[in-house]
Image 1: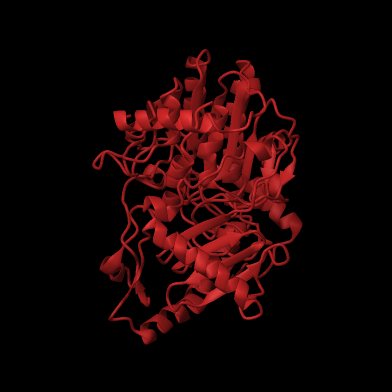
Image 2: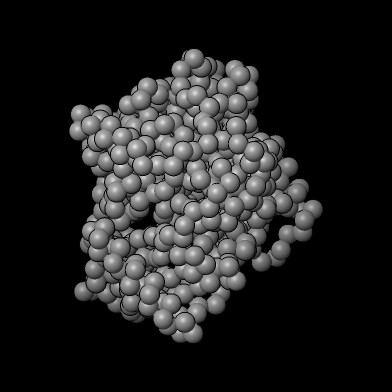
Length: 530
């Protein structure tokens, strides 16, 4: 970390500790295990209501921690959300507004996307000047470790995990999905060594093993272990045994003859019935269980804070069309709740949370101040957007505040260029294509089916003004009109989605759920074939 960052943190610690109320006594120098899953939806785990996916290890953890039922990712796509977690800043503040590698400006036209706007340009690496969780913790003596998906820059732009405070990096670089498209070894990841004897091992367990090794080697020191799975991002893959288990479960529940329905732009999956995705989720849960078991084995569980969350909603449309997030509308990439509301669990072992559910709206930007608060390291509030959740975790309340999102892009999953504000029960979405707005009262309409903008014009106006003022203050980037936009071309693309694509998805689903499904001879490399 550079000297200016160190001086800034030192000043911030003095500033806040001198004016903060006396908090509950913290156990001495807690360890931190941060578990980040890629593309895991709000209801994709047992403790958030799924009766199809099985996550026993996470469900047990949830009975001990606090579940935030209004927990949000800071973006509906990965890179922006990941940057917000690490820096405590909303997306418009740090400038990574889309997944890194997404086309921008006129480059968008190369992909035959016939849209009214050209997506905004955006930052392609985590800005060096921003203080991250590992940098702040490293400054006060924490050992810092990263494993898994990074997707915030790479070696070429000096933006690997080790350039932002992590002392050890296992598997993190510029890509956003498993290297070589493989969840089973060999992994072909330049930052994760392959071992011939491990052929067929799944990537999630391998990352868990690396995390376990770090914890064991540093059990006598305070540490941050940041386990950032590539799963459950596509390409979704699992073993034959797990596919068999969940195919039978889907059959027993009853397989709907219709698996998809049109959302505004793309088809959306109607049910949680994907046996491959279910198997991948179970693999993730087993890897989480392995790390928790290691903490218990070493006697560290009583002094280790555990965070579990996702970087955005589950994939309902686009990519592998993996899941359904009922009762939420949409999924990854979308501006509705399914795109940003995620599993959000914090376990502080010396608190008596016991699976309590809290409905305060909270965001990925809140992790940095919360974890630094418990580590005795605080940062000047003016430098970040997040708030420490320690008061809530210890039984108190937080004053109402707005949460903001900004996505001046078109999502691969059907999302539209928008900026959004949630304040209290109300949520307003502003669409950049034509300026129209949608207003929802989430306490009464979690599925966002009833737009109340015409019935409540004053509420819509107030929220819109607050949103626009925040965007201006943040120096937000914006999409721009495409002068060669053709409504006729756009209509043809939409027609294709409603016919050819919908039919193809139904056929692929039928094959995956049939008893004789077989993706290839070795099940994506998970089994040995003579």
